[in-house]
Length: 250
Length: 229
Ligand SMILES: Nc1ncnc2c1ncn2[C@@H]1O[C@H](COP(=O)(O)OP(=O)(O)O)[C@@H](O)[C@H]1O
Ligand SMILES: [Mg+2]
Image 1 (cartoon, rainbow over the protein chains, first blue to last red):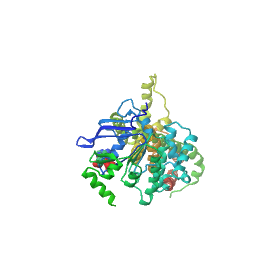
Image 2 (image 1 turned 90 degrees about the vertical axis):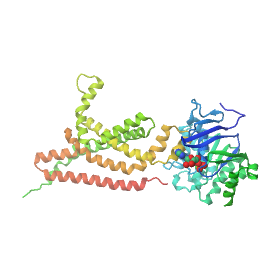
Image 3 (image 1 turned 90 degrees about the horizontal axis):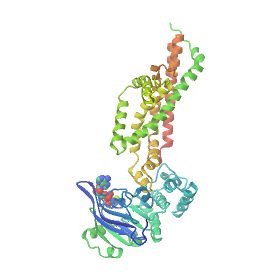
Image 4 (image 1 turned 60 degrees about the vertical axis):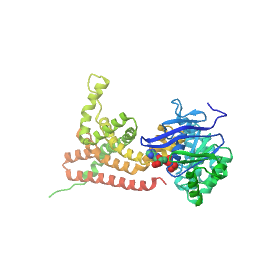
């Protein structure tokens, strides 16, 4: 059930409450076209993580619809694990499985979810590890790698599932400054190859380089959703302007 | 004056080991394994969002933990044949045998303790690990089997082994259903030959040595298997 023309990710009036008193997402509407790179930014606590976790149904939402590749997440017939397997996700704290070697981290879901053979999964994993420049670390455990290396493995692990889109939740904000570039480089390359990406980040250099659109969120609302040029040229809202001046200052 | 005869130990050692220690170690190993498997399932039930399951597991654990082990062993030995009779609808009480009865009892009893250990272990795995598993397309079952439970086991291994050492000592309670474990065998010799002090001293020494060496081993393992973070 794939749609050639429609957007890859489509959110319409999505609202979510963590409790009756606390609405974390308010009427969020946006979409990400195939091959598009969208950067999501906004102050801490504004709901960015919650928003992208809704895209692969890691977080449930109470109102609105989300479609990924034409599949409605709220449809009771939707096989969520199967859908999630097609969307790659990279987390702020890497979340590699610490009890498994790097190769096992790369192979686990390929084998258990996609049913690939060990050889097949290994070949794919090794190729991706090579691509992110970490071939020589294949036999190590995650804890033996630096943060930047772990995050590159996490990206390789997601790519091993041949995803149709990738979600990134502040992939560089837990990293020491000298390691940010090595991770961003991998992401830039991915964007240039035409991967559909939704990236929560405050790295405005990355946004300027490869983003097509920028979404600015505040208090659960999408305040700005514009082309990169427009956004950096003249963000309309005071809140976005204030936010930009703050993060561009340092 | 008391006359000690420690030769009696050397003479009866083959009997003590063959009859007694083999039983004690077999029961300890099997009950620890069974208790851990069942305990893990109970822990998962307790943490599940299905209210009935959680309630059942909580009730079971609390019940087992509020009964003296001796009583459970005793009751089980006498009740299981009748429970078997009721379930299988046989004419006479089902013969279970002392070993099977002891094994079932210890497994069920230890499961309550292991479930508490595993519950803490499962909760010690960061939530992000589950999210990462789900994001890769793993199902609940797969996330538990490949991501959460292995890490919980590793985190809790020292506690699990310590509990197993306690179990090793507790198996001596099978004397209430007249099974000859290591202590039982020593006790028999002691009574028969009137060598109470020698035999009970020896038994204490053996329990102490095995438990002490095992706990040293646990410390070593702890250093080796800690997950590198
Ligand atoms: N599981 C949760 N239960 C209750 N509140 C939550 C939960 N997760 C996040 N929140 C709250 O929701 C808001 C948005 O969180 P989040 O999406 O993580 O923001 P961001 O990623 O933009 O920093 C915050 O106020 C946060 O405290
Ligand atoms: Mg966040």
